[in-house]
Image 1 (cartoon, helix red, strand yellow):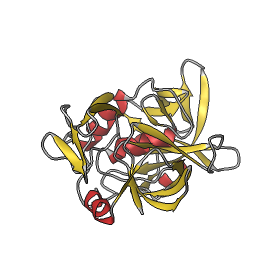
Image 2 (cartoon, rainbow, N blue to C red):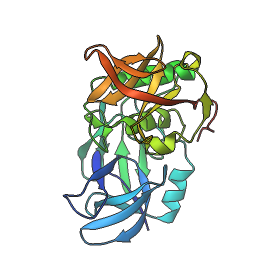
Image 3 (cartoon, helix red, strand yellow):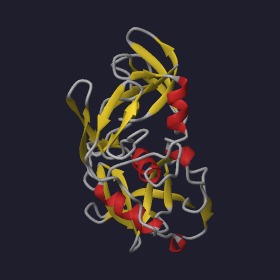
Length: 263
């Protein structure tokens, strides 16, 4: 069985309970395999990153294997506003969307998902030819988005979800969690080598990677910590000028652009 997220943002939880930890979120257009289906909860596996968790059985629609395959093999389409809407012709209602949502099977002014017809009048996101500049400019749109564990929207996002979405909108699919993202790309030897679009990873006292951010111009980093913010980056880590101290200890730097095949 396969499914598609047809709401703006829905939580995906570690266990089948409303009280369970939110491990990620699904945005409109995310497609997935349904591993188990119950009256209240479904266990799913997301198609783009293989992440598994539980979502509410009333918060998505089933799609056929054929439709799933079509979505898998059609380039993703995103818009470049923080918030947009699609018009659902069948119900004659609007559905709010947030930045990072995919418009599956988009063609012209809308798309069809089996018997559901959607219309969209916004502007599609088109990456700049300079991919590093494009990554930096898109990341800046999320500035001041509040931090939320497992979040993936401009109204609540975590560090790895932030990085994952920025790259996804440029056709580069990364894993969901920072410690797994750190396995991708080529390692840089010095922070002075880093360019906009490179990723910086940070660890704790036990040596476990717990944070990620994206390098931007001027020896700085954009990352989600309390909110999406810009701080200084050097060989020690992230220096917060407001707090006048280092908040994260640098573990390694990775070059992702030109190292991961675009979808």
